[in-house]
Length: 262
Image (cartoon, rainbow, N blue to C red; front, side, top):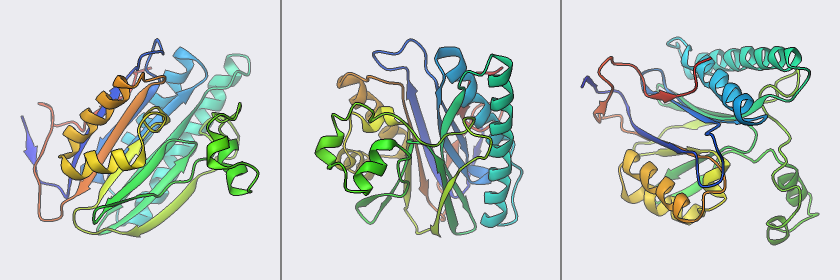
């Protein structure tokens, strides 16, 4: 195994779940370039897998940046390419919807930026507390924000799973961004909605706070499976360790990632 000592210790886990036939999620761990991401495909089986794989594959080609602002711009450009490609494929297939949510954490030289579109989430665990950095792009989240629905009513709302933004759905890509300064031992949790359907924020906090990233990912997915896993579930965790934690890579030294090649 090849070992290097970047500033992040990270882990990832993904499972098809108990109901779906195929895993339409994809993830990316690229610690040497400060990119960590989860994409959740939609469009049905093959189309969903294709969508998430294209999004993650584009992000995997991001070159080493000069700053976090540069990294953010490079990733936005890559996501724009993925958006255009998915629209082309949808047109070739008769206008069906082929898209994917994206949630990504970009970190470089002591700063971070969160980029997302859809309902895959980004959490920050810092000093024993958990904060959701992303905001769900769903109809139900908008209704809660407007005061039309309560959080309790939202749990049974018929259209609670309808998302309002995604890569590949509209010609103009609509991303939301949040930025901040890194602190030692920050842990970023990036996940598809398959996790948060079954696991609470408090449970995520407990497992992330008490375990190394890979162990926490494995246990979060296992807990989701225990509770029925009604959707694909994917979790990525990146811990900021500027004094140098060791991260283990595959034999070829490639970053850990999962997507379905085209």
